Image (cartoon, rainbow, N blue to C red; front, side, top):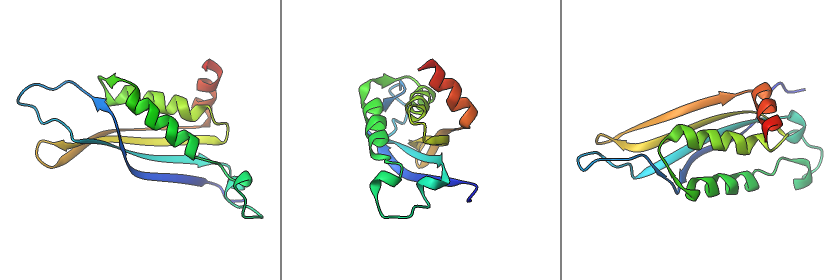
Length: 129
């Protein structure tokens, strides 16, 4: 059996408001999320072409968009924490890596935060939810 199966989302622009900025600060125009979900191989290597056999990530994406819109965040870290908690609600997810970055920083850069959590961490979050 395959050791690792992943669902990969790249460059999702989130409708969010993060940070507090002064009059001379560069205000980010967007916050972009990359997400890699580790899932069981049997949800990728399937016998038939049927949605019932795979992990349906659309509800998770909808939840993430809702979390992003829900409120002003002081930090990228807190939004990432809430996204990890949302991922933990799906037992099919065995690990997750998230990268949230804002752009621009200064004139043309981006700056972000990345977190990777394993199955054991997700299990502890599931117990608390």
